[in-house]
Image (cartoon, rainbow, N blue to C red):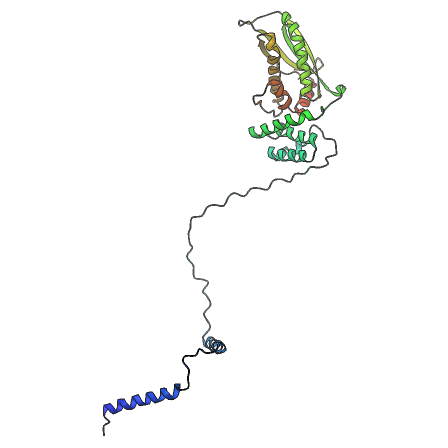
Length: 303
């Protein structure tokens, strides 16, 4: 016998409803479960899951290419400045061994020595900037300013005239002009001794010849340096002309400064003049070590 379809449907619904009723009648779907139960359920679920596969290291990750600013150049650390024994007497060659480190290092040294109150040593370090440091124009200008500031505050390097190096300043001119030239040449000799900080003892001597005048009416003159002996070395001879007795002193100093710098430049580095008057150039641009070299070379036998 066949069961009618409506009855089948009714019976199915009754079975489903009965199962749902008996399975959920005591359950509370509105109240959240306690935290302890949630933790227990989470632990149970995680323990039932299979372990995750380890990452594949061979998988290449595409590199992200971006425009970047190159890092700034790394500055090399400055050499350590060692002051040494500040109580020992310095020599005119002091700090020559530091010249390969450059003018900037010598300038830092000079500044630190000034801070320590070692002004004589500081002056020597500033002089090394000029005569051995291969300074650029800005560094030379700074060193010259420091020398001008320090030298007047310190005693002469050599205060005993008997220990000075003897040299001779020669001048040649006509007989009539020799009388005018004599006091000016003597004054120039004293100015050179002062510029050398007492290192040199300068004797002035005049050689006279026939009176001559150039076509412009200026009196011709020649000057040169030698050592004190007949066979001593000599500088070159420079010629110049003087328009009036009033300009003689300045003209003579300019030529002397040029002569000294030219002679020293054959074997040493000498800072170029920077527009100062010639007497200032002799006092600040030419170091005491330079003056000592001038006297020493002129006292050697001529070649």
